[in-house]
Length: 376
Image 1 (cartoon, rainbow, N blue to C red):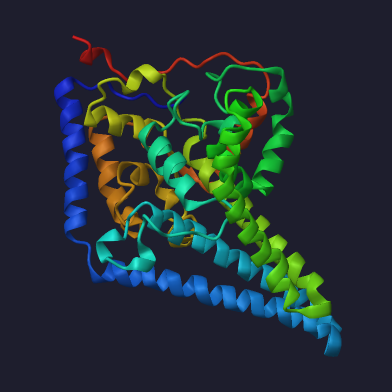
Image 2 (cartoon, rainbow, N blue to C red):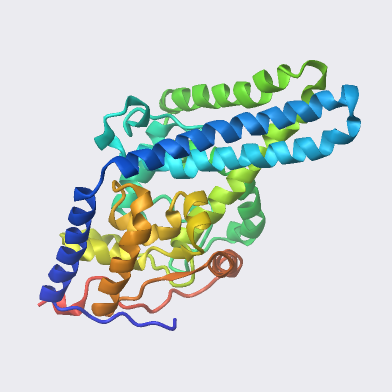
């Protein structure tokens, strides 16, 4: 560790929380037409990149009739553009809308309680596993299921078991199939395997997930390829590649958000009687930003500002860039480390964690989240 957080007095901790609350209040007061225009422009980009991507896949498929040389260029470009559409829909549109960031618009198509997105997992399960559990108990061991997703040992504080030796391989497979991992996360299959959940209970939980999986499979791997008739194979492969592109990108961005070298995990005890200031401090010390500018911001759904997102999950994400300037200044004044770095740097640290903690390792010595100054 190359940083050291300054211990805050109880009064300073309260002031820290008050300043961050005040920033949210000022930002929400300025929400208006520009924010509505922004998210509607993202909707348009999702729609038209999907049309362009699918159109190029069909062009490539039917080019076998009149210009076979067009097959691979058109299909590769089509898969890339369709993958871009899926990334935008998941990251900047779906994830942020499901957080309720645009509920103030009263637009039924952008309602966080009813929006359904373009992955095999249901938005309803995501509202529980992500919006509630992950954002409430960020990086708290035993409460935040996102710590390793039940598959990986990312932090030395996690108990080591022999099967973690396989996790570098498991991590790659998980990245390729990330939407499927998200889909089954709330099912807690380990409890079912251990006999703590009956077959009837598991079937009841799985039914809505199964229906969503079936709809996505039929849409991407049956209906759209079938429209190409005998030339269905390039369209089918293009859809597979587009989904893999989206999976790899979302996995990369999400893992960079909480699993870098400087991110911390916390024991369950830290959330007992947690004050607002302590909650902000935990979010800060458990989150990581990605630097890179406007393009990274949009493609990551502004999760490049993971710290700001965890401070203000229901504030429109297009506001995070401006808020980050003030958040960083507040953290500096209170002597708190603001974890940020380039995408290669942050993801490199994630990869190192996955490889290093596949083997036994001792817990780190870090400053306690509940500071000694608060115990008096």
